[in-house]
Image (cartoon, rainbow, N blue to C red; front, side, top):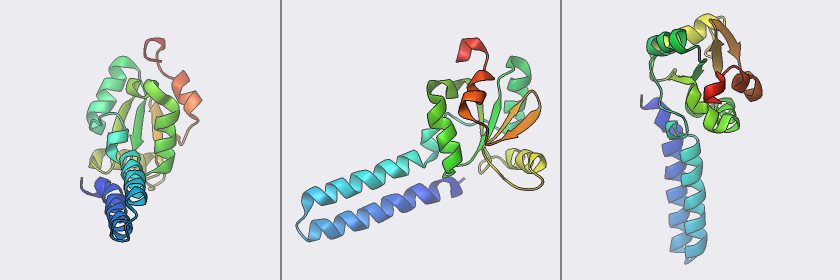
Length: 146
């Protein structure tokens, strides 16, 4: 669980160090700007940028009931972030599983990708799709959730 926060916290730490250095030099405006940029990057790369994750078993159960795709992802993955941002509000219509928080989710991704934890892996009707086009993923959603 803490692994998902290593990258964002590293960005915050670097931002604090750079901002402190600039502030000590008397460059207050630069220090504030640097800190703001690093905090924003940390937020975008954190689990907070994604809809709330559920466990793989629960996501598979829900998907079987409502037919919505399951997205396996992890924090810090630029391809996952691209998918999330390009889906916009439609992202809430998917079932999201953070493979760093859910061992069953990581196992499902490894089973679908010949032992690799390649994300995002989107499962639609029981078939895995690795790093699919966001437009295609949006088309897989029921019309009521688009």
